[in-house]
Image 1 (cartoon, rainbow, N blue to C red):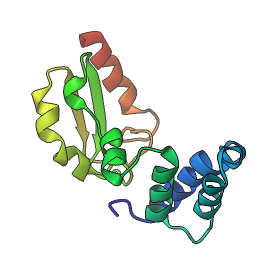
Image 2: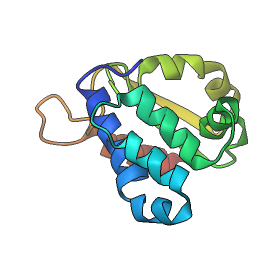
Image 3: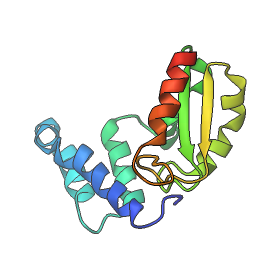
Image 4: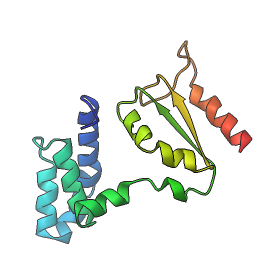
Length: 145
C-alpha cells in the first residue's frame, strides 16, 4: 500500500463509515448478500485493502478492472482551468500518483500543478504557521485564469 500508518488506519475507518455504516440500513433492505458484505467490511479485523475491495463489490461496478477504471482521473477530459496542489510529503495523495500522471498533466493546457516540497495532506501553512499559503496560490490562479 502506498499509504502508510497511521493514515491508512484513518482511510480504512473512513471507507468503512462512508460505505458500510452510513448505508447499512439501505444495504440491509437491498439483499442479504449486500448486508453480509457490509457487515464483514465493518469488521475491525478488515484492513484497508480488504475494506476497499469490499466497497468495490458493494458498488456493483463489476470486476476489479471496471472499478479501477471508474476511480481513475480523466485528466485529458478536463476542459476548464484546474489547479492541482500536491505536497511531496503528502501521505494520502502520495507523490508517486503525481509522477504516474505527469505526462497527462503536462499534456492538458487547462491544468496547472503547484508542487510543494512540504505541507503534508492538510492546510499548506507558511513558514510561521499563521496562514495557509494555498489561499494565495488559489487566489492567484483564479485571477490569472
